[in-house]
Length: 389
Length: 247
Image 1: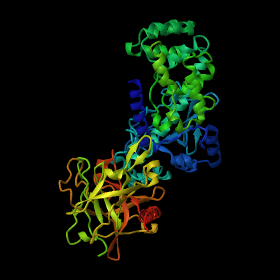
Image 2: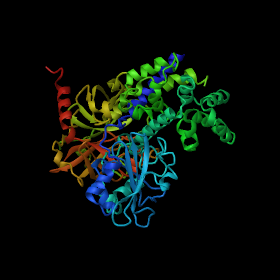
Image 3: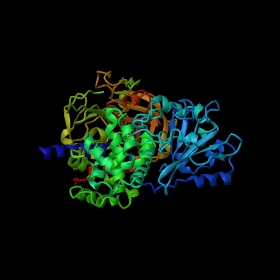
Image 4: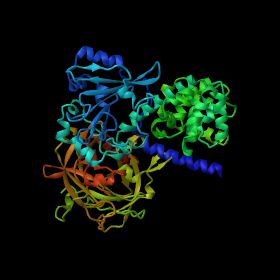
């Protein structure tokens, strides 16, 4: 019976992959020609743009070609259907920059940008103001940015819905959105006209060929976010304090074994445990597991922001068929695997196999789409361990 | 008159057959100008075009089934064709464009019938020159698909509908072109896109199939595989199909 069900799953999954993955993107964070803060500064120093229009003109081609379109603003920079906020992200979203399109809109004369620092493994945030007729770049992480991004997290919804974006459902633009991108008013805008037409217009209008613009940016943001979390876990001091198996189980299992989890939490972070419990006791029941999982893994970082909580838990943010990556937890685990030498004999072969097949553990940046059919750690682990953790 | 109408049926599955949205019935006096045919398969009803004495050009998406171990395969015995007022004709072989298995385009397939299409039906000429395909070009869509949105299609499944649309864009990289108005709908995929040259029709495109965007495609825009961009494969495959086994 089990083999039959497995066959059905493999068949179904294979069909899904074969039909749906043609416009998929590779996850290779080293592949791009993306720039960082210092290169943005160089660009400004060299070209001395006086306006945002000028600035756009000097952007590398990869930034002009890869952008998403936001019709409902949720941050400081205003956005509307008619005058959307443009989010340029290059090839791998290492640096992301935004601007809007009408003088009446808030933050019209500012470019918001964030850039991933490969050393500290976090996104950092800045603003470039053109208010004075020249580009003035803010310090890193100004309060105005960190109010929302306070744990340095990029704010981007999970595959496959990005509320407020053009193509907000699964990268399918509506007829109205397509019509607006083709309109003279949009094409004649002083800023939008500096970009090549959106890739959705340069692709045949067929659903299965549609470019995955929102998904593509999300893949890289989530990937880097997961690496950031892995770094926070390493810095939390939890590794080596509790059994490797417990780290593993906490990461990939979302079971309700709170007693076990709280015992582990106390042994991992005794100095912070009382403070944690004061928050834990106030947490709604449905979030208690997330709270304790996150505290185990992050230690003191848990208190920095509750936002960290909801990305620790296994989820399906990437869409495996598009990327080869299944969950944030999977990326985190692959980054932690070398630091979990006693992860457990039953799990170890899976990890070894996974690492051998993908090469991902030694070089996570090189995960390619072909890895999508490998046996993933989390799949096997959920069956083996989540009843325990 | 070089080309005449052939109407094929295949009733392999009970699939809602479907014609050009906003189109007109090809009138009897002009119908002989078209080489468009109705084609069906395991999948259901679609459309096609006669390109040789025994060959129909249609869409791979109409004819191919997906098998996990083999990829996309078209099985001739799951398809048969029928000319209007004629007995059904069986299919000897179906060749899918190799690109279809890799990335779902070009969505092209050539059907070889077990016998020649009887007179007076005749094939259409193909456009070979890619430079002919430009934005603003008049394209005559001809198909047997739905005339309205899904579930509101014409009940007359044997009628050829036609509509002239203007080419909106040419996608060189994909070998396709699009139009931005209502047109092809369910059952039209694989159908013909003609241009008129020196008073006769020439095939320049094959209409695409859509799935999730279907209602949008029916009402607002559509795409066709370009014949000139795929001419080399079509002519080579047609030649091979009609020379293999010949003495």
